[in-house]
Length: 245
Ligand code: MN
Image 1 (cartoon, protein in one colour):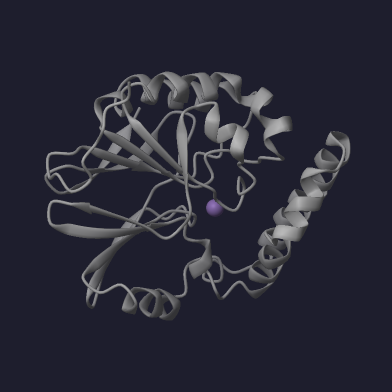
Image 2: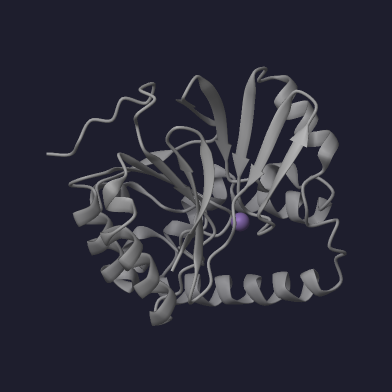
């Protein structure tokens, strides 16, 4: 039986992570994540993963088998801790089978949580990178329900080949993009947050861990994960960044 966490209870311990970009076969980082599931995350009431847990996800039928150890770790963690997973731009194809296997609930962004009389809105973060027009255009096509429907029905080999080609193109494109283009557009963030008064923002995606104090709200950017250290936000009596190693 999983513990029922009261989201409004200030004693609730919440951990938030994102951008692990786990690759099957990259054992060190996977081991670090599994250790995190067995220790820090196990002591929390709820764990939120705000996208890009996996570096690529080509459909449950193809990818679950590649991440069996991660699925098992999530599965046993879900006995103690409520797990909520949001798709990122790499793993937006996480589907029903994944949801059932590790006992995770899939979240659609934006998701709101309350802690210690403070409200937070959780998103992956890529929607706010509006300066990267090519990326936003491509996202519209790739994440369109019709594209997803067709892609998930393609033979496994073809899906692997297509995603490999896309990845190559995106790596190429990033070489020529300035660093600013790949960060959030602050006007877009202000606009988004103006719809959510008295709320702070927590997001990942940009891999630029930082606290931005803006007028009317604070924006917390999650850190990404390396083979030897990870990063999380802990909500308990307040908000803290913690290092995982
Ligand atoms: Mn991302």
